[in-house]
Image (tube, rainbow, N blue to C red; front, side, top):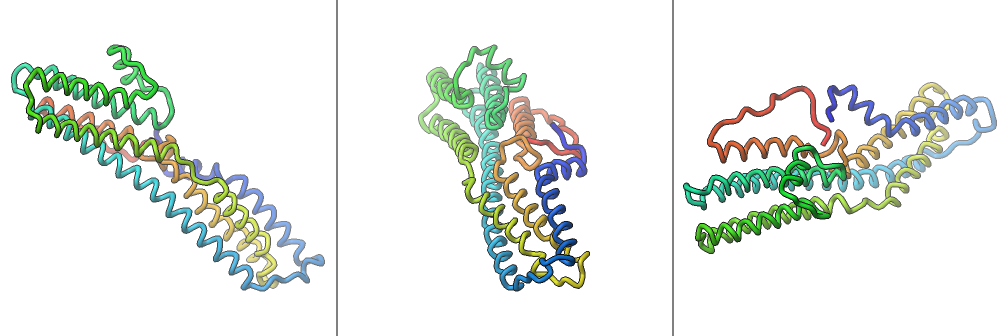
Length: 295
């Protein structure tokens, strides 16, 4: 799935806020209107109270956003490691195996590593495997509850077989096995991020406090400028809600959303890099466009 322009991505973001926008706009207009014509005109909340509430919300939002970004950045670093270790694995196989009678084994490892990357990407998004993965699994009769883990197990089984067939020394075998272990660690880290849910109570607390701030804000502003009062009652809470929604969207980097890690793009990079390694030919990469993947 692609987002073709910034306009679409803005609409994607706003669809999470439309209800809050509607509620706050209606509240601001109603309160801003009757505040000058009814008994509410006599109600005045000291500005320091509003400021303290705003400060509390800001601190909570800062922590929330930092935690969400840490999850996103950790996920991106993990996939950077997957890119590097995928290249390293195939380079080691190519370097350590004899130049003769090993092409089939090299291609077998390369194909399985490419499929592993795509399978991990699909499993993290909890969607059906792509066609390339499904065809490979069917062809090789691979079945398991955790397909990426199964593919790494096949890596290890083939490594043991190659060590016997080509008489690999222990040092070479350990180096390759270490690379496979790093791929397994990266998979586990991704699963940890995917399966660890951010506490719902924390999000509810922030959202509640934002609405508290929106409720008392009109009564702490100058009544001499009703239009400005209405605008501030709308803008300030919505800015805080926008920050909150940014953190909520960013906290799950494997949900197939615009803010996610571009896993499919990274898989394509891995596929091209591995193909170059085993063929010694430069492969043309996909052309850069103004679009970006929702991975």
